[in-house]
Amino acid sequence: MSHQVVPVRTYVMIFAALLALTATTTLVAFRDLGPLNNLAALGIAVIKATLVVLYFMHARGSTRMTKLVIAAALAWLLMLFVLTLGDYFTRGWLGVPGR
Amino acid sequence: MEQQRESASLGMWIFLATEVMFFGGLFLAYILYRWQWPAAFRDGSHHLDVTLGTWNTAVLIGSSLTMALAVRAAQLGRRRSLVTFLMLTMLLGSVFLGVKAYEYHHKHVEHLIPGADFRFEGPEPGHVSMFFCLYFAMTGLHALHMIVGLGVLLVMLVLGARGRFSPDDYNAIECSGLYWHFVDIVWIFLFPLLYLIGRHH
Image (cartoon, rainbow over all chains, first blue to last red; front, side):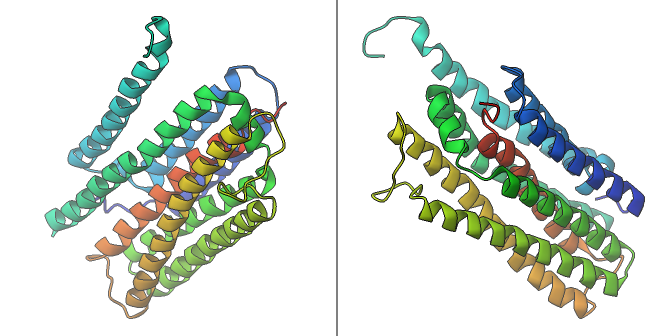
């Protein structure tokens, strides 16, 4: 845990950025961008989550051990998604009956 | 002391890593079903209120700001501002849950709660029902986390008002903050995935 005190200004700026990104994600959703719509929705959510983790949750000034735990959580989530989706998305590739 | 402080927040992060997996399973289920029935998910999503969803996202982000400021107040040993910011956080959290309850009520009125009472005029009502199953499972689990969070903050509020925390010992506030921000992050993903599917149609 970092015990350096973050200035209020930083928190307020992150808050403002999060609000702006929320407005952006809603506005973008009403425009037809094709497959980019999903990408924008997820991309903006990832940016927002990163800001919260780095600044509000103080991951930025945290110990290496804490950073390792965060990385491990993301790695496990990635495994869950990549392996399961890799299975489902490729099932139709071979016309095996009763698959 | 320094090591104790670090292990407390490390333990919280490990707990949050398990929570990531907990919600991860639901997000995975969501992806698979949406991939299978994109049109039904779009139709279902159009029955959610974007205005309320956006507003609630802003409310929850606001509560994260006040929570961060509460932790800061604890770091500086400012008891009164700690109590004020904790109360503000709880107030915003309650507003979020109130709006959520109103939305749930509205779904009940519109017969959109999966089950015997579910009605949907459209080509694939069964698949739309699946969207609402996931909607209620995900937002319900999220709301449950919010309720737990409010309980934790209430305890922190009482302890904080009694002067339990000092700049040398504010682990409990820091850990409560981590939990609260995590719940905020879950919503940051839930909002676009549930409310904003194919809105341009």
